[in-house]
Structure formats: structure tokens, C-alpha cells
Image 1 (spheres, helix red, strand yellow):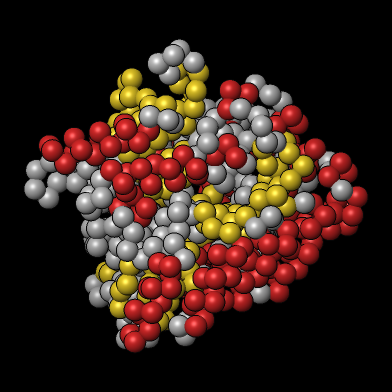
Image 2 (cartoon, rainbow, N blue to C red):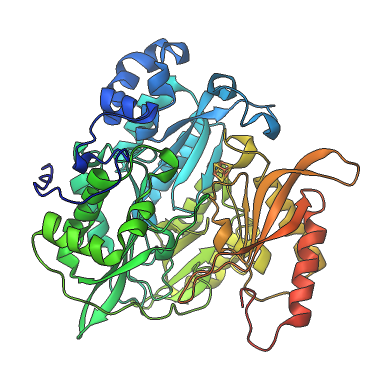
Length: 548
Ligand code: SF4
């Protein structure tokens, strides 16, 4: 694979000391940058195969354990029993368990039955049956031992899956519409562009040392389901003078400094997408801020430069040609962006989207899903960006039966709003950054709200996070819950949540308002959310959504 040439023209000024390679700051300015310079993250693979898997956990070099392992989707789990109050104070070695979370990247959310069954087998054999569907279309397994990793890779790679650059300062999984190519209304099918980028660049040293993670979304779906507003780079299907192509957005991201992506205003033809992607990724690699990790995401660079200057640098220094101006995407269609339910495909078949509970499944459930799909003539089960799944290619006369079987397996095709639109991050069960528990709390919340508000049918997103990092996108939820310790009525410190209200994405995106004093303990969460929902129902005008 070729490495894109680094441009010679380096005249963009930044204050000294941001660690931008393009301005000559090649000396690492922090420990992370030192580790990346000392040895490329991709090189850890061979050590895992040759040394660590043979000699066990204690043989792992700490710089690999807490750094380079991520280049292959491996994070140590949180040691069980450590409460959230200790998260920020304990040294990493005391938080580390001897087991790993393993993230399987599923670019575009596309899985066939062999791939799904392979993940199910790995889950049962090596991960105590765990499996979580993430809100970036990946599947994460837990309790993985280092000794198992080579065999896991062998099994995954045999069916065309991988964990390469699933984490780390790399181009992460490329999100795509799970209905690409089959949706009757789509503007353009982005599948070829996703494949183009993964084949050319994932696992290549051209982009294996970025200042921070780099998240991509490519979709021509009219529901704009891949949330382009909050990705580092996104290509959104548009039509310009009768020609279908993409509108490019850069610099979205949430976490502690949330920013919406900016449109560059450029029209990108399908065959140019990989070049534009590599150009933007190259700007990030060369001009991105490497001094402070919390200022390293590309959103800070484009926020300082502005979209116009960013586009100028992209065209003149990286592409060597101008991109034409293009139209903005139309308003997303279809209300909810999750593809849950039964809908027609353009070939006369149907797709069936269903909602596991907050993305949590297990090895046996994944096998069951594969069996149900196969019995109904489908060979494709895709993941969505809302922790859901979609079975494709179901013949009209098989729809009733597949819906019945999925519902019987508690995989809801017609879920309540609360089951459908509640997401939760990993939380304290496994995540070393977590302050509170999330998956079980969110699951309990769903049960309570279904019982208390059985007729509520409005769209309403509830996103539950275990810490301020926003893996579950709290700032763009109607009700965003950020895990923290709070004081209860008895004056004790307990798990709870800071509440953000009224976040949204779409044509008029909005970050939820953090209202001072709006905090709830985990225990009183159902009461609290019920009150908010009932107030909304009482006060809303006709057609008004929660974020309005
Ligand atoms: Fe972990 Fe925080 Fe991300 Fe949740 S939001 S998975 S607790 S880092």
C-alpha cells in the first residue's frame, strides 16, 4: 500500500508548542506521543502472537499493555469491585484486570451469517458468552485472555473480520448505513467507498500514528442514520445537478468539549472519496495538535482554522485539485434514525430491524439470531449505530413468522419508545474510566418506564453514560445522563447522573442543556425520568418534539 506523500508546503502558523508535525514539532511532547514514536502501534501484533500469548499476561510490556494493544482493539478491563470514587485516584496498574475487552470492527455494520456465527462462537469459547453491540456498529467481547488472542484473530480473519485499529490513535471503524444498497429511498450507496478506504488504509502505517482517534461515517441514507454531525469526518449523500455524490463534514465530536462537524461545502464524487478521506486524515496527522491529549481531536484544529481554510489546505496541499461546491444534505427523513421495524427493500423483500436491550446480547443470542435469519431465507444481519440489528432480505411471506420468532426471543421489532431509544455505554462493569454502572441501570429504567408509561409513543432518546466521555452521546439525547457520584437524601455519596435535557441532531442540531442542580441518584432515576416525560406530555404543543 502506498503512503500518501507529505506535502512540502508548510507555512501555516500555530502558536509554538502544539506539537504539530507539519510545523516541525517532531519531538514528542507527552508520554503517549513518546510511546507512539518509540514503536508503531501496529507492531504489537507480532509480539502478541510470538511472546505475550505464549508467556501470559505478566510478560506484557506496560507500554504495550496500556498503549499499543489498542491498535488491535484490546483494552484491559476494570478490575471488579473497584468503585467509581477510585477511578480518578488509583494508578492504572491497580485498575487493570488481567482480562481484556476485545472490539471487533464491523465496517458499515455489515455481517453475514458466517461472520455472526464466528463472533458467537468466539464469545462462547473465549469471552464467557459476552457480547455488546456498540453505537458505532462494533461488537465488543469481554473476559478475553491474552493466550486466546491469536486463535480469535485466526477465526475472525478466516471470515473477513478483524480487530485492527478498532481502538487507538487510528482511523476507527467506518460507520455506514446498514441498509446501504437495499434501501429504496437512498441517495447513494456508500459501500464501495467504505471498502475502498478500509482496503487501502486500515492497518497501513500511513495513518497508524494520528494525534488521537479518527472516526468516519459514510452514508447515503435519507434518514442520515450514521450521525455525520458528530464524526471526525463524514460523507453524506447529496445530489448535485442530477449527479449523486457526497457532502463532506469535518470535526464533529462529543466528550468534554462537544462540537458539531462543519461542512466544507465541497461536492465529492464517489471515486474521489478515498482521496478526500486520506487528505483530511493526512491534515489531521500532520497539523493535528499533539501536545495535549484533550485538545488533540481534529475538531480543535478545524475550530481554530475554520472550514474555509481547512478546505483550502486540503485542496492545495493534499489533493492537488479543487473540489466543486456542492449542496447541503436535505433534512433527514423518517423521524427516528434507527431502522427498527419492518420496511420494504427496493428488490421487493423486507428488512426487519429489532432492538436488543441497550445493545447487550450474548453468544447464544447471536447464534439464535443467525438461525432465525437463516430459517427465513436471509444471510445478512447488520448492526446499526443505535445498538440495534437489522435482518435483511426477508421475503414478504416470511415477515410475519420472523417477527414472531424475534419477539419470542425478546428481540423487539415493535419495541416501546424506551426500549427502542435508550442507549447505554459500557460503564463500571468493565470500563476503567467509569464512575457508575450503566447497562443494568438503563435496563431497569426501561422496565420501569414501560410499566409506568405504557402508552407513551413519542420519539424520545435516553442516553446513559458512565462518565463525562460521552461514548453513548449524552449531549445529543433528549435526556442525556452523565454518570457521576451524587449525594442522596441521607447525605451519602452514591451513584447518580447529571442530567442534560433537549439535545438533538439533524438540520438544527443542539447540545442538551446541563441544568444546574439537575442530578438524580441511580435509584431515583425512574421517578425522575417519569416526571420529565409526564411534564413534556402536559406542556407540549401539537407536533412539538422533546428537544423543541
Ligand atoms: Fe467508559 Fe465513560 Fe465511555 Fe462509558 S462513557 S464507556 S464509562 S469511557
